[in-house]
Image 1 (cartoon, rainbow, N blue to C red):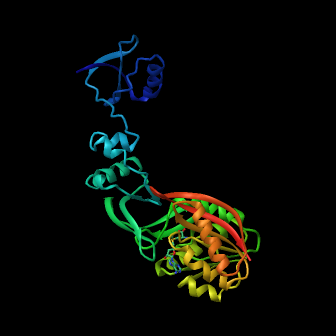
Image 2 (cartoon, rainbow, N blue to C red):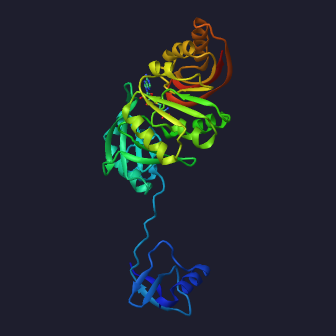
Image 3 (tube, rainbow, N blue to C red):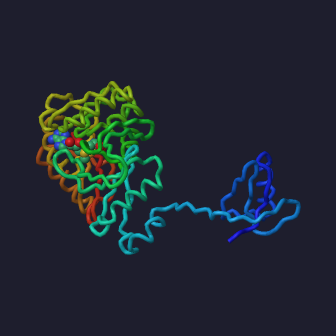
Amino acid sequence: MPMIGARVSRAEGEKHRKTLLDRGVLDINFKIAYDGDFIIFPLKEEISGYDLVEYNFLPLEKRKTSIREILSEKIPESYLLKLRAFDAIGNIALIQLSDELISYQKIIGEALLELNPFIKCVFRKDSIEGKYRVPKLELIAGEYTTETVYQEFGVRILLDVSKVYFSPRLSEERKRIASLVKKDETILDMFCGVGPFSLMISKKSNPKKIYAIDINEAAIYYLKKNIALNKTYNIVPIHGDSRKEIKNIENPDRIIMNLPHSSFEFLPDVFSTYKSSIVHLYAVSENINSVKKKIIELSSENNKKIEFITERTVKSYSPNTDIYCIDFAFS
Ligand code: SAM
């Protein structure tokens, strides 16, 4: 249906737009029209002093701002409630979907691309499995690409999401550990992945040396690239099994054990190899006390004294379990 418009010269367009807006007559729900050297502003009502014309203005589409808003007409509400937050790793999004949502994965992926212009592709992430803790991925929207650069607190991390483990959800934890490191400490990062802990410590603290071990060759390949990218040359990348490799490494001041499903299995090796150190041990468990109990048991089996320093819940892992970090000293 034709509406009333105010026709002004293009040269004076901005001046008139402000005037019409100030006087409360500009209808911001419709698109401004262009006609040669003229602009036609959609009006709510007539106004004197303007060349008034009738015009079929196009309505302005309101930009949808949340994923629920975009998907509300396409996916049943009860399913939408199960939609979890996605992880952005550089320009790649990873999202875990419950069984009900898998048949809607394409529209969910496209909605994520629409809302986040910096995201170039979206993968559905299944459970993380195997020795290398690598996720099973399926492309659900955008162009297939798996290598990206992620940034946190000034650290740049190049990685391939299909070949290595990486979680942006541990960034605060990495910052916390780096803040504890004192000048000239020697650090051992026993399950380093592409090096997020080691890189953050090297960049933000002032350690003497960081030994970073991983059994996944691809992780060490990217760690080497990341050392060059961040100029963090006091990191020593080691490809191998920590159980064996630690035997050739000097007694560290601090040990990071971020292999939450099986960190415990490596504690006897740590206790038998080193005299004393501080350990940051990550473990998946139903409660924090059973993690501490296990540490006490293993330390006494290996004739070590334990002093707990701090403990915290890092993130939830499954409906019944969390990932905990226990900081303790042994001697
Ligand atoms: N710390 C890294 C991070 O925060 O991104 C990686 C953590 S990921 C949960 C555990 C890593 O341990 C994987 O990269 C895996 O390849 C490595 N890993 C598993 N068993 C290992 C072993 N026996 N020796 C060394 N690395 C191992």
